[in-house]
Length: 275
Image (cartoon, rainbow, N blue to C red; front, side):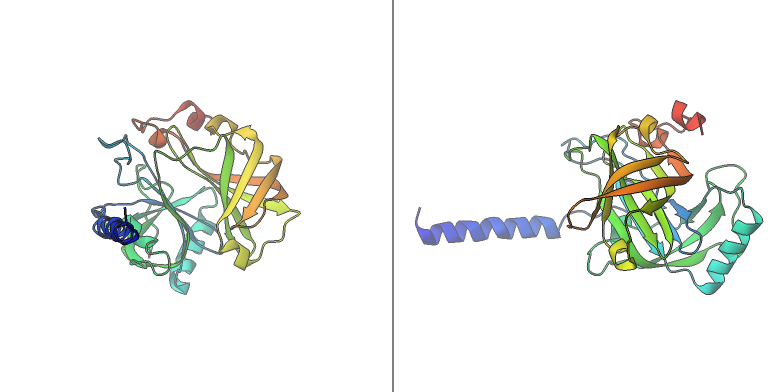
């Protein structure tokens, strides 16, 4: 084949690739419930599901097939109402957010300037699917603006799931949390507070993707981090070299296993009943 034909053929392949990617079907709007946690900074974590594969086997069917973690830009009034409710109910482990329907991927794409930077929602003390519900006074049908995207990723059934326990480190200011890195079923969602020693992370560091690996733990729910544990870990900030760190695990804010099975179950699993 001549050089000219090779160039033309390559250009045609590129054109087809760009055309198919630009016309890729976007998810329909859906209700994407979220976990809300943090004392001084408000974090949001989408509650994911897998729910089987499509016919081609290259996509999970659930519209909730994403791990998305955000920092909310609460107004002073919103933050005051949230803090007051939390102080009045110190036994509440976490809060949840029930938003109006929207397209989840718009919160983190395109990466440089996401299409969606706010949504309307109601904030609930505890899980919004529990009965009775406990909407927070003054935070019903409120507009939640997004300050920044911590993590946004669609689950890929072809991706290799880590064999060892892996977390995403999120934080700002003095707050530090670990969110379990989710890949494919069976899996689990978990958020714990944590303190690090041997590592000083700036807010600039925390704005990057930070992976924490517990090298001697199998990546299953039964081996997850527990409150009070002190463990050795490997920490990687962005594309930097992995470094060693020591972790002291605080409280377990959230744990869910059943909804990340295929098929999902809403009945408590054995691990959930231990909580």
